[in-house]
Picture (cartoon, rainbow, N blue to C red):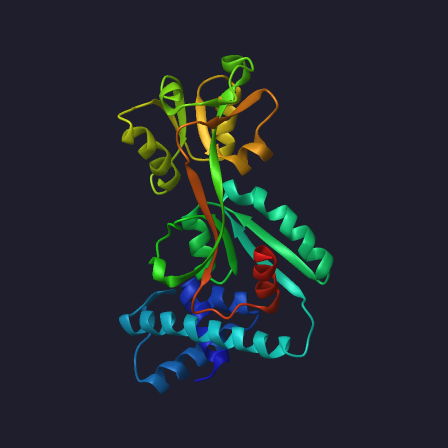
Length: 295
């Protein structure tokens, strides 16, 4: 069995039908059916349960699917690594970013494109779980994220490069402060209705901020849990509540009708980092990107 046959097998496993898999592979159905028979004969196992035209992986088939993905990823990365030895920095660099970290990318991207003009970018934003899945599928090489990185995979699965931390600030409608406050205490902020960044699965930033209130015996009234920075800022802008967000986010995304206020009695900071798979060979462009982020 060779790499070509493994790709055939994975296409069939993905589509669940020989006909659709053949179309995906741009080949005729009979040769693909013949290749599947040859693979099963060589291995001496049945890889699919047949239910009419629909194919369902057997236990042996699922094991081969998992191993085949790993093998093909390693093969493709090895080919890329060997090719890069004789080339300059070029190709497409795929980067993921949680929305609250998007503002950290432009300065580094500008320096990178000036230094390596042959590299283009594919940038995907999303929450930790979506980005983690995309990285597992090799659709992303690097992720810029708030730490800890919460995904469906164990933290030991990733390499992490910590970046400078990002202080939290309070964001309020300007009419609430009328320019009177450059900073406020948590006790003062606890008197306001609050918006918080939180979903059913991503709770890290919420927990960090409201732990500080709890330490002082304070329980702000949370009037809305927001799934994104954009929602939180739009609600603050509408005068519905206040929010505590990373300073980099507020500086870039907050409109002029809002007031940024430092927190006087709490040094709350958001940890930021670059994340990538430990078992993946990073492309030359990804390695140079890491270097620029730490320069």
